[in-house]
Structures are given as structure tokens and as C-alpha cells.
Length: 178
Image (tube, rainbow, N blue to C red):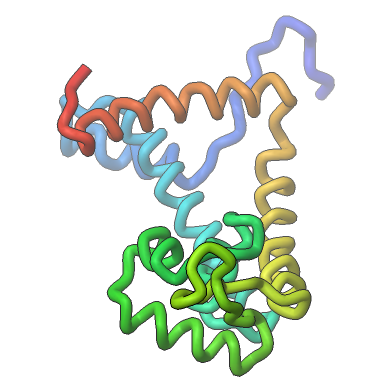
């Protein structure tokens, strides 16, 4: 049977649609759109975390190594240990241990600071950049695969809407309420 142009088509359903339907009778005040959005964001976050962890492992990195290389790459490939400590929200001894392990693997080098010879700068090596980039590419491909189902305008709208939600969350976190 052929579809007629004026015939109403049921949109595709995902797991969350069933989840919301199950909870609406139990929680009559449940806003189905809020529940659906939060549930979908949560499921996508878990999915991306699993993809990231697998991608990191596939390239011989541990999560904490990837995180450290990622922060270092985000600073242009060089940073003071105190900067990395702040970026990673770690105790000084934890950062020192990470840096020693990454240095043994040839992913970073410590060089005397150009600003203060008593300090060191951490520099990302070509091997460290390559390991980080390979693991990052796995995540990037999955992000593009999933968000690629949206048009450019839809992706921008999604990003703008999520920014609006994040600004509300950040305002509370920062002690402000708008």
C-alpha cells in the first residue's frame, strides 16, 4: 500500500519513548518532554563515554593518560605542571605520578621553564600527540556519525539550546541565579 501525501506517518520511536510511556501513569505530573530530553542526554553521554574508553584502550592508553595528554594538547602542547594540576583538578603528587609515567612512555618531556629556570615545562612529544590524536579520532568519528543525522542548522539549534540549559546550570554552580 502506497503512502498518500496527506497521510499522517508515525515518527520513529526509540527506547526513551517507551520509558516515558511507562513512567507517565506512575508519575502523573511528569513532564514527558523534560524526561525524554534528560533520558536521551544521559544515554548519549554514557554511549560517548564507552566509545571514548574503548578508543583510548584500543590505542594503548589508560583514561588518565589520555586526559592528561588531552589537557596538554589543549594548551598548545606545553604547560606548567601547576596548569595541568588545575585543569585536571588533581593533587600535586597525582600529577607528578602521571607525568613520570607519560615521560617513561615518551609521550612528554620535561624542559627547563623559559620564564623561571627553577621550574619545568611539560612538552607534548610527537609520539604523545599521535597517541592522543588516534584515540580522539575514534570519539570524533562517532560524534560525527550520530550528529551527522542532523542538518547544519539543526546541529546549531541543538548546540544553542544546550548552551541555554548549561548557562542555567552554571549560574547555580557559580552561586548566581538568573
